[in-house]
Length: 110
Length: 127
Image (cartoon, rainbow over all chains, first blue to last red):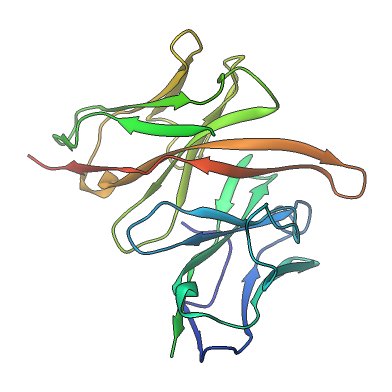
């Protein structure tokens, strides 16, 4: 069902930089902004990045987002144990006329 | 601080209609450039957008669910609701309600994002 493709897992040791990719198409990422959500175990998703690279108030600056063409990326710099979570990209899809989410990436801190 | 809270039956029989309500507190559902959505997540799986409603009553639905979904809003109660008909076991999931903020930037144009989410409610479809 997911229209946006993410790697199923990513990992790193504390302090490392972990990138997460999100691949879409011209009807979603290619023509609309990308948002990222963090979902800690057993909780609702939380907005992490909006409009490709903007951080809401309270989100640490070690989280950063970027977009190029039909792909987007989230980077976690200085990985911390509390960053263990599932991460989802999302965008509006002009063809479906609705929101689409990524397949999700589980980040593990080794 | 805006808060959203889902409510409704946790168990629905196959072929029946799932009904959930989201109550918004800490602000008027009618104020600002927002719209209101339902999103679901089967156990161990990803997020699926179900649909959205503006307080004007205008709606959009996920094409894969459109024939079975109705989202409505009651501004007097600061609530919006979801009805999903003819449910099967595949509709078993945690259902979230969420607020989407719609904004404009001269560089990116219009953009939207979910800034507030309810805690989610598990709905199981089983006889």
